[in-house]
Length: 320
Image 1 (cartoon, helix red, strand yellow):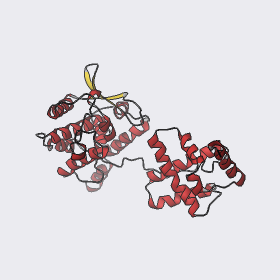
Image 2 (tube, rainbow, N blue to C red):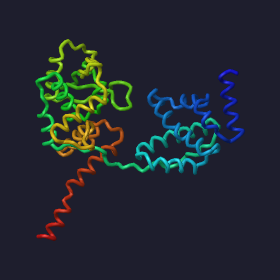
Image 3 (cartoon, rainbow, N blue to C red):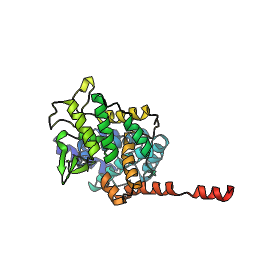
Image 4 (cartoon, rainbow, N blue to C red):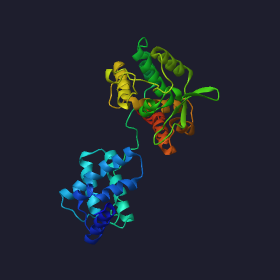
């Protein structure tokens, strides 16, 4: 039997029986067709595939061959007991996409339509650094070594431009270019295929990067802007994990040890200090390259609460 014929038989069997053999479906031809339907980057397809399989196994383990909307809701509630809301949301999104496809193909009704995901906390999960804290962090870096020069350049770049670790890891030397009368670093932003966005590289950061590149010696323009010095990957591109570890190590060294202080805190620091020092929401949105300005407004709302001195006013009224 040819592949197309097998697909037709699998589809017909589901339509006629009104049920899904979930364990068989995961490894069957129809599952391959669903992954083709997603039409996204390989990593995204891999993520959706990984996230939908627990639901299929949930159905199989509970003997559910004709899942209904109530089964999707029950699955969501079970996930909430052990997983973070963001993970529950990701798993549900895969299930919703799957049944959207089955309905479109006329294979099975879209039973996940309008099933709500987990309620997400819109507040940031990481803290930002105050002006004094970021100053202490940067001044503590030993810039007499190649590692120190590299780490200092990375930290200053992230703190002033709000770059994500992945954007730092993807950067090459040739991505440092002149725009108008300033130096810019062109980056491949989140969800982008090419390096079409850029951030301005201020003078102090440009000098820090130049100091690091001079110490590195013989650096080709097509090489990574920041290289690993680990034995197994010496001279190779750094990973996001190694960049995150560098930030964490330096934070801990100056006594800023907290689960809420990470490399991503440097991005929050850039946004917060920008707003505190007079920037508009739109300027901050451009800095962080947010598609939706509501994401940027989270910073504004947090600052509004910080500036609210209600407790002090009430205390003065009570205690004089």
